[in-house]
Length: 336
Image (cartoon, rainbow, N blue to C red; front, side, top):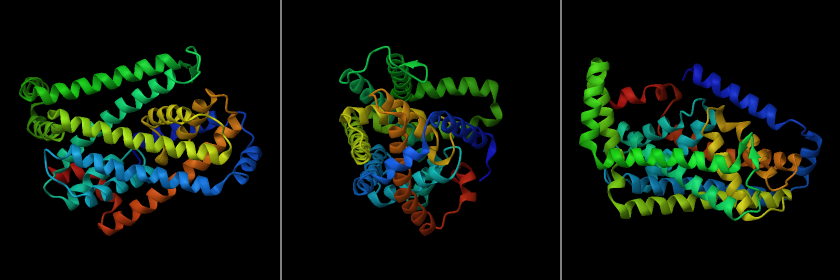
C-alpha cells in the first residue's frame, strides 16, 4: 500500500502530538516509574485490553444478522487483522482490511455490505463513548470550566455528543426511508456525476443492507449492550494499568480517559496512534491531578504492551489467510 497524503498527514499529526505530550516530561522519571511498576498488573491490563476484540467480533455478528449468520471464528480473525493493520499501516486501513478479510472467509457477505456494517459499528461506538464521557463528567469532581487542549470539557462532551447523535440520526433515516434516500441519491448523482451513478448506487444499496440491524429494536439493544461491555472492559484495562504504575484515581477516571483517547485516535495519525494516544492520556489524567510524568509513563507502558498481543495475533491470521498488504489497496474493486 502507498503512503499517500493521508498517511503523511497522519504521521505529521502524530509527531506534533508526541512533541506536545513530551513538553516538560522528564524521561528519567518516566523510566523510574516504569521500572518500579507492577509488571504483572501491566501485563494483565494488556490481556484485558485484548479481550475487547473478541467482544467486537460478537457485536459484529449481531450487526450482520440481517445479512447472514456468520460464525464467530471468521469475525474474530477479521477483527484481529483489522486492528493489526491499523497498528502497522497508515490512514486507518484496518477498516478496509477487516471487511476484506471477512469476505475472504464468508463469501455470503460482500465487501460493500461488510464495510457498511462497520459504519454502524463505529457510530454505535461514538454514541456509547460520548455517553460514558458524560456519565464520567457528572460523577467526577471536575470543575465545569476545565479545559482539554483549549476545549471546555463540557463543550467537548456536548459537541461530540451532537456529532454522534447527528450521525446516528442520519443512519436511522437511511434505514427507515431507504427508497427516499435512493431517490434523492439518483436525482443528485445523475445530475452531477452520471458516469459514476450505477457503481455508487450499488455501494449505497450495500451500505443500506449493512445497516439493516437498526430495523430491529431488540437487535439494536443487543448491539448497544455489547458496545457497553467492550468499552467497560477497555476501561477496566486502563484502570488495572493505573494501579500498576501507581496512579491513585477512581475507576471513572479510566472511563473518562478512555473516552478522550477514543475521540483523539479517530483523527488522522500514524500507525498505532503513536503520540495521539500519549497526548490524550496525559491531558485526560491531568483532569484528576495526575502529574504529567506519571500520566505519560502510564500511556507509554500501557500503549506499548496492549499493542503487542493483538498485532501478533492479527499477523498470524493475516498470513494464515494468505493475505498481503498490496491487495488491501484494491478491496473495493475486488468486491465490485
